[in-house]
Amino acid sequence: MTEASEALTIDIDGWEGPLDLLLALARNQKVDLRQLSILQLVDQYLTYVNEARELKLEVAADYLVMAAWLAYLKSALLLPRDPEVEPSPEDLALRLQLRLERLNAMREAGARLVARDRMGRDVFPRGAPEGLKVVRKSRWQAEIYDLISAYGQISARTRPVFHVVAVRQVMTLEDAIARVSSLVGERIDWSTIESFLPAEAEGLYRKSALASSFVAALELAKQGRVELRQKSAFAPLYLKAAQA
Image 1: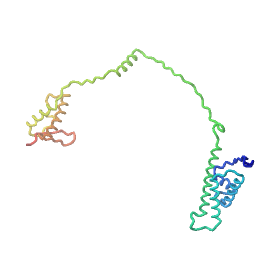
Image 2: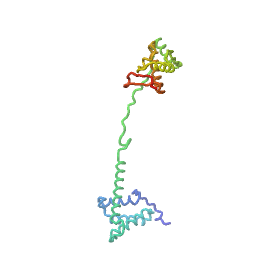
Image 3: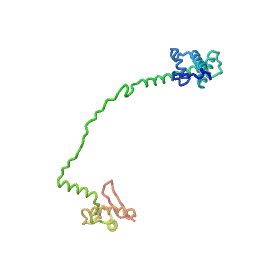
Image 4: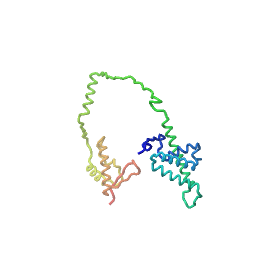
């Protein structure tokens, strides 16, 4: 192994691929990427690859593939166009320019992000005040009535609840059916349902009797034993014995 082959060569340009190299070479033309000379760019790229091979650097496969493609593109641009070959060399050159424009925009955006001010180096946050530590202590004041009232409330929560139903006089549905069915046979004309209530019914017992008599009338009408009539909602309810 010769000394030339053992020499260490370091490339600090930071190429990440053949497309980055093409972008750097295109920038050397000092023109807009949309007005780029593809032929001049191809010559610069092929020159770079040849110099790298002369220096006995290991050239990556993607660089060689790009060099072969650019050589084909250059020959296609110089030679007369074959109308049967698609896409055309002009379309291929336009696609290359668009890719270089997109890569250039990405690199410029990345450079602007890196150049922004950094926290702790260029800008510093404002110090937050520590504030005052507040210690709260409760001071209870209560009299004997307050203590007894609080004890009663807590005791009521845990005390079992008893529901007591008040005993009161009611008219059962069986009694109402028997009373309405016996009285309706004695009357010929229409009679209000209140006329079937007992004369001594008053207060809560009258309400119970009226409710039971109403249900009894519905049951007898269902059986076909009485007829019901009511002119409108909440109007008086009339009933009489059904005709046989």
